[in-house]
Each structure stands twice: as structure tokens, then as C-alpha cells.
Image (cartoon, rainbow, N blue to C red; front, top):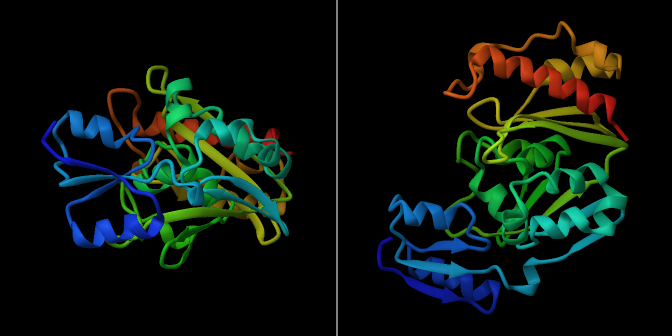
Length: 264
């Protein structure tokens, strides 16, 4: 690990000022991705700006058909929140599947969404529910936010403050987890919203994506059988030592069927 300066800020404004005055600084909340990266000497920030304890970035509230989760809210807090379970039970369920107890008690929703790991769980929920990513500068629709592997619409110095989820009519999440890491080899979030059915896939491709052909099929018939013959290009899936592209494409279809069967 390279030498660096650690700063635990006392406000969001202080964090923004630190980023503006130190272009090589990195934000840290739970550190579940950043710390291993530092240990492997894959990053060399000048400063670690710790925002994990800021009360203005934490909390879970439901109001007027939305569920709002502060960016520094831990996965465990989402998984066990009575408010989240009542508003969007599938989101609380998803949070409980992330990693292991240590990861869930340290990792944050904002960190996961900011990092946009192609096998992370939260991006599927954010995209599947058509959520809004709110930063210290603007609001970004989920369809505009995710831009590929580890790539988002966030600009330099922009900090996620909260994520606003519209409460769906019904939703569900199913994933096939890697047995060691817990990351999704394929995870599918299905949501029936006021604007129609949305199907978001994580783990299978270079980044989270909407399976629009399945959305169209489910709009006509909201049953698992509706996606049996729906097009899904295996050539666009990831391939590695764990699974071929064809295997991942099959996993997507199977996980989608499971999610549809669990809609509530």
C-alpha cells in the first residue's frame, strides 16, 4: 500500500472541498472495494476522504410512494430495515444476499453504486426499479447513470448523497452467486412499475443492463413462461474460468424465471 493521507470529514461540504483541492483524493465509506485495491497497489490516491460516518448520508425513509436510502447506509441496515421491508421487500432481500456478514456490516449502498462493479447486486435494483441517484450536484436517472464496467455518469468531485427508489407494484430478485465471493454470476431484478415491467441483469455482462426483450414479453404475459423463447445474445455475456457465455445466458433466463415466480 502506498503512503497517503487519511481525512475523516465532518460534513458533506468539507468532503466536496477536499476533493476539489486534491484531484488525486478518493472517497471512502465502507472501503469494501477501495481497501483491497489499495492493498494490491492498484491505486495511489493522495488522500482517503472518509464520509462513512456522516449522518446526512445515512438513513432509510419512505414517503409519497418512494423509498429513500442515504448513500452511507450499510447493506445490513437495508436488509434488516422494517421500513425497507415494508416498502420494497425485494430490495431488503437483495441487500441480505450481498457478500458475507463482514461486508454487509461495512459496505454501503452508495459505495456499491458509485463503483458499479459488473457483478454487484445493487445496480440491478437501481436500474430495475428505475431509481434516481442523487448527488451533491444533481439528480441522475438510473437509465442514464450506468455506463458500463466500473463506469458511471458521475463527474469529478461528484458525491452520491442518496438513492430514491419508486415503490413498485411488485418486484423480486434472484441470483446465482459465486460460492466464494458471493458476487452474482447472474442476477436478475424484475419490477412491475407504473410505467411497465423492467428487467435488470447483473453479473452476466460487462455491466448491468436491461433485458428489454423480456420486458416486452412480460408486458403481454406476466408469467415466467413468457420469456422461454425470448432473444438473449450469449455473445454479449462475460466468459471466464467460472462460466462460458452460453452458461451465463442460460443463468440469466433461469434467474429471471425465478424472480418472476417470486414477484410480490
